[in-house]
Image 1 (cartoon, rainbow, N blue to C red):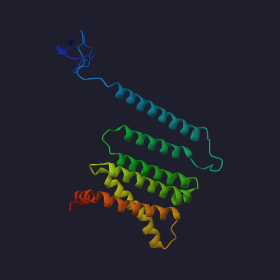
Image 2: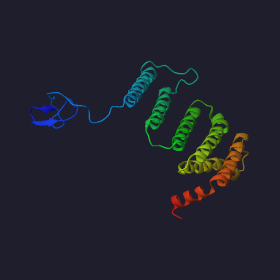
Image 3: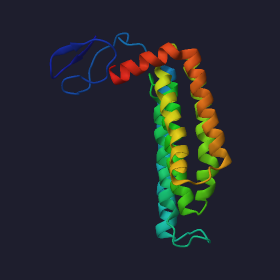
Length: 222
């Protein structure tokens, strides 16, 4: 057993420093109290490594943009490094969510899709392809996410995925209500997204009707 020559205490396990004064312990160590997890340590190392690479890339992009004056030929007044930094930070946040245990798959998927679509709106506005994002990319992404979350709802026995499925159904119906109120023609992709939303809602009620009712009662205290 190791001992601290300053605190005059004996410390079990294989610690290198005293837990009280942080001085180096003397003597022979014992078997560790807690088991080591090489897999978790390796995952932690990979997470820190990719985080370092991400910050290095962000610093390099900011330097090329502001210090070296590297611009896109078609957008000379655009500071592209800000947009690039937003994407890198968003990817880091999504990776952090994946490394965090105990988070439902439906929640991870919904949060990731929402963040990506918001950043895509900002990027498309800055680079003049906003129409493509609004009329094609967003409805296709929402429809695909609805289908995946429906599958997760069918596999989930705890009812955790239903909340995110109903949330995305709400977002799928909003554009239809807005366009109908403004009396504008709906693009074909949003029409397909609306049909997918209705079909998924009907399937969820048919296969998980009681679970949905209990979720509503729990969420809204009915």
